[in-house]
Image (cartoon, rainbow, N blue to C red):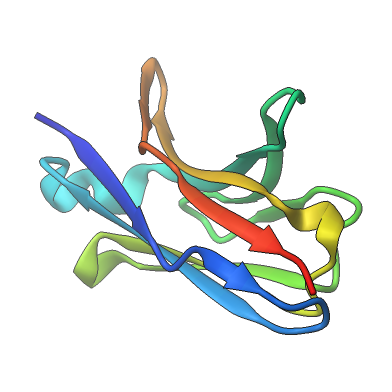
Amino acid sequence: QVQLVESGGGLVQPGTSLRLSCVASGIGLGFKLYTVGWYRQAPGGQRELVAQLSANGTTKYEDSAEGRFFVSRDNSRNTVYLEMNNLTPDDTAVYFCNAQYFSLDYWGQGTQVTVSS
């Protein structure tokens, strides 16, 4: 059974940084073939793509994340990371990890990120 587990969320002040991690279990050696990414959902809002990293290294970022957030992966650890810098209150949301491979689509339970002074 495939499971994605996020960690690293929390309460931080504006202007600071945070790194989220997501460990995938049950995927095995196939993890390197997956497109992995991070989505977020703010209160009352829809889930939106924040950052995505394909198997060949192509990245995609939501406009407000471009230049502040950086997605990376360690295939040897079946782990994907999201480095978030210069956080603002608008970044407050539940952040979800996602792994896709053709019709296979897996989600984590989410980790809360709150940016507040």
